[in-house]
Length: 224
Image (tube, rainbow, N blue to C red; front, side, top):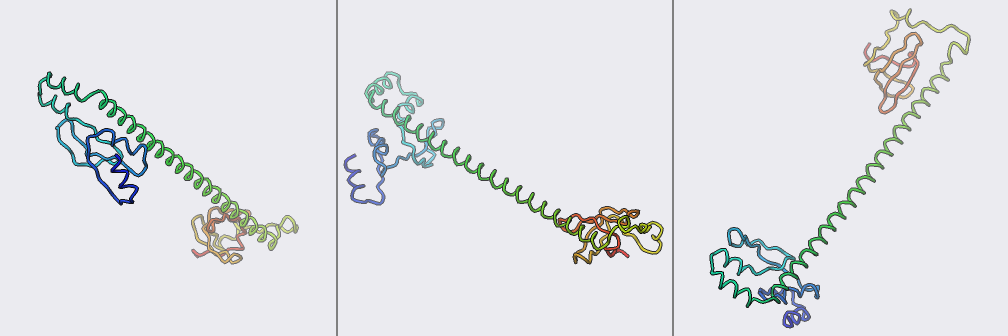
């Protein structure tokens, strides 16, 4: 342990030490310059997978492997006794440390996921608010255009003059139908017909994101 720490103090870029000494495996928990790693072992097939597991200290599986291979129970019992309680405690401590590190990583991932969800929720809310504002602005613009059109063409009720009968003049002037495209000279835009009220001399159209209600006399039918 002293030798490894001296390498670290001298500024060694990388030192790899393979060991079965449990005390060395606990070094990383007292010195941040060190990290544990092990080669994954398939205990079912009794062979290594050669996959490196960073942050996970290796554990001795020698006695367990010997037991599966059919070694005498007497020999195994003596081996466990010689292995000693101290070594067993170290392995237990390593397992405890591993569990703590794993839980910390899980908590970090959960925390990051919560932050991401919060950011996505905020972005979605901002998008909805922006869309609502744009829709409201479009409706306001449409209302202004309709008001301007009405001021240019006073209603027959206000002037006392009889309302023109667009139904009776349909043969003289082609009235657009729903789905037709028409020109709106006052706005310099084309729009699609949504509703026609020939008896009132009015028409409802959709221009971009604006829904407008205009006089029939203010549009030019593109289908004619």
